[in-house]
Image 1 (cartoon, one colour):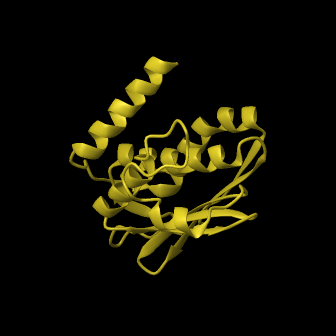
Image 2 (cartoon, one colour):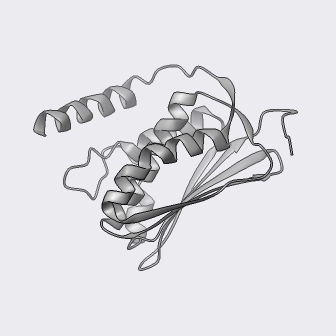
Length: 175
C-alpha cells in the first residue's frame, strides 16, 4: 500500500509539473461522464454511496482531451466520495447553457469551511492525511487548458458542489 501511495504522489507531481500537451478531439461530454461513472460505481457501492446522474437532452459536443477530462471527473468525484466517507449521494449533471455546457458534481458530505474553499485549488493544499494536495490543482489546470471555468460552492452540513463550465464546440448542438 505504501508503494502505491508513493507511485500516486510521484504521478501527481509529474502531471502537475510537466502536464502533457492536450490532444483535442470532438467528444460527447455526456458519454465521457457516463463512462467515468461506471468506473466509480464499484467504489461507491462499497462505500454505500448512491450515484445519480441527470444529463442534458441536448448532446454537449466539446473539443477536449478525453484522457484529461476523465482525470478531471475522477479527481472531483473521488474527492466527493472521500468527503462522504460511508454514505451519501453523488449527483452529476450536465446542462447546455448558451455556448457552454455546465457540469455539476455535488455531494451530500459534511461541506467545507470557507478557508478550505478559498485554498482548494492551491498546489499541495490538503485536508487529508494521505492526500498530495494536487488533485484539485490539476483539475483546475485541466479546466483552464480547455478554456473553461471551475467553481466551488459548499455549505457546512449540506455538502459541496463543483461547477465546471466548458465551451461547446461551434455548430455542434444536437437535440
